[in-house]
Amino acid sequence: MDRPRERGDADPGPSPVDRRKTGSKHHLICDGLGTPLNVITTAANVNDVIQALALVDGIPPLARTARPTC
Image (cartoon, rainbow, N blue to C red; front, top):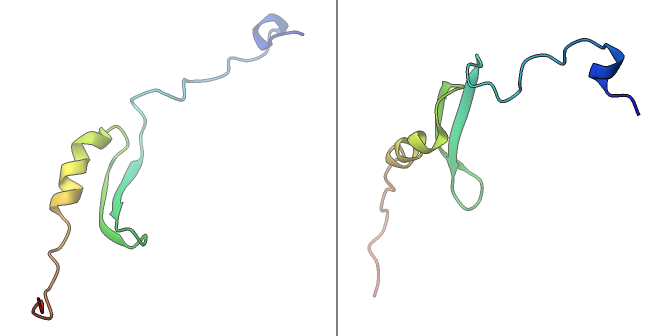
């Protein structure tokens, strides 16, 4: 079987894991039912771990509607 380089085919192009990509990323956190609680849009090259705390900190507080009856 011939490989692309052996046949003289064109270069396959830039690496798909190139960190200098342009574009954006959508970071989102959901509850157990899949309802989005917070969404952040960042540049494509931003690390996901860095955005994790920002997502958790951005969750709106829950409103208490009734007193517990214990």
